[in-house]
Length: 254
Ligand SMILES: N[C@@H](CCC(=O)N[C@@H](CS)C(=O)NCC(=O)O)C(=O)O
Image (cartoon, rainbow, N blue to C red; front, side, top):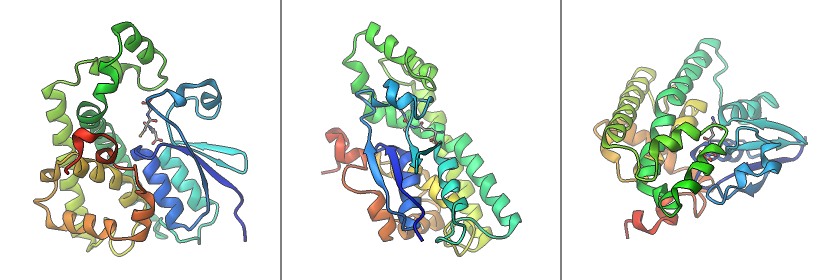
């Protein structure tokens, strides 16, 4: 049975897009990709704002129906066929646990990962702008105006960096506890769920930025990560160009 045509608007290095690509690959759903260049402003062009008025990726086009926001898209992919390589626990109480984990990740880890990402990788894009160009860019962003203005062209402060890394460390502490309580190898036990997929890109990003010390004192979190990285679905999701170190030479370990 065909589920129809799927197209995602995404960026290879976008952590939110990686959640959606992982889910599509896990569910073995064929899809096409439109890759947006976020530093040329593709996400702010009128034609894309008509698709996603938030001016961010990802967005999914399923037979002409547009779905936005990564955590909404991945659950939508379960709702259209609940038996297709499920990623949501069947038991309501486990499903509630999973959603509480995702809310925690979206509130604590998601916003935190942006600060080291911008400071360590993306800042040069903004430093080459004049102040006037920078302000105009910030003003044009539906969701990220204040974020960009706070960063400025000199970057986030050391205090901001410390706050964000301590939130990611707290997230890893929670993950360790959840893996322990539920028996591993995944956050909710035996099976991978959306909770694992939602936090995976944050850990990959911090690994790419060389911050493994935020979780590697928890053996069960390191094992969780190695297990996820060893899957074919992971390898398809992180196709060439998905890591910042592959794109920004100053981050490369070689
Ligand atoms: N809550 C949204 C957030 C999406 C988001 O922040 N996307 C980033 C990439 S990970 C983006 O498109 N940024 C473009 C910009 O800041 O202009 C989701 O989960 O889909």
